[in-house]
Length: 245
Ligand SMILES: Nc1ncnc2c1ncn2[C@@H]1O[C@H](COP(=O)(O)OP(=O)(O)O)[C@@H](O)[C@H]1O
Ligand SMILES: [Mg+2]
Image 1 (cartoon, helix red, strand yellow):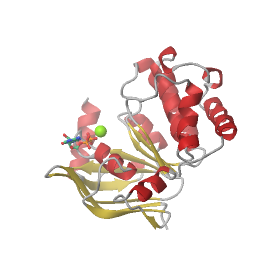
Image 2 (tube, protein in one colour):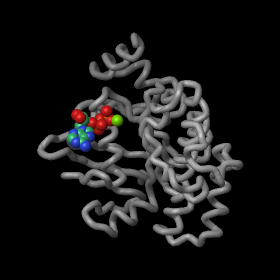
Image 3 (cartoon, rainbow, N blue to C red):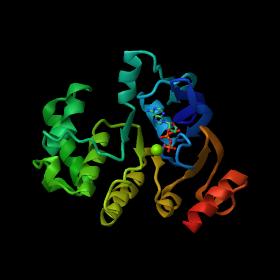
Image 4 (spheres, rainbow, N blue to C red):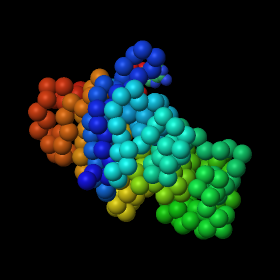
């Protein structure tokens, strides 16, 4: 049974359909990258999965449990299973790094503060920021803030981590450190859904690459299949456009 099973998922904004009957699955430990043109619905898919945009049809199962996006208990249960990191890190600016990491586990999961702090310090060490626990976000570089945001997402002990263009807002020289953090995370066996413009990285790190267009999956396969021997015309034209670029 796949860890994540998305079946015939649709969603939109107002009367506009964005996700149009999308199906996708991931096994535990997979790194699934979503690629495709701007506007193809990659962010919308992640927003629906995490409960920020309601689906209009279809189902999402995690470990065989159907997620109920229509009620509060369903959304709360979801927070124990999936976390997301966005392009803009959205750290709480008025809180220390440590407090950023402990707030949700203490408030939402009911973890004891001492335990949440111990875990937060471990996570900060894992992202190379052990010495920044007492710092405030505005004392950190963009790359450091994004690594804190990743650690904060992991503090919820999610089964699935969603990453939406987490390096796109960074200075070029800060991109590498965040990619390195994601690379080391992937090796821990956490399941990830990744949207990134860093195509060399996507190719290196992914177990599966999913080509999306107009709210649907065009084609999916191993990185080498999608990047080197795509079968669909839309994937071929997308690959040619990125190579030329
Ligand atoms: N909050 C919103 N309200 C209305 N339309 C939106 C909103 N967010 C995204 N869209 C539209 O949904 C489509 C898919 O966007 P998005 O999921 O962000 O694509 P991608 O991440 O692949 O670039 C685009 O046409 C975009 O303009
Ligand atoms: Mg997007």
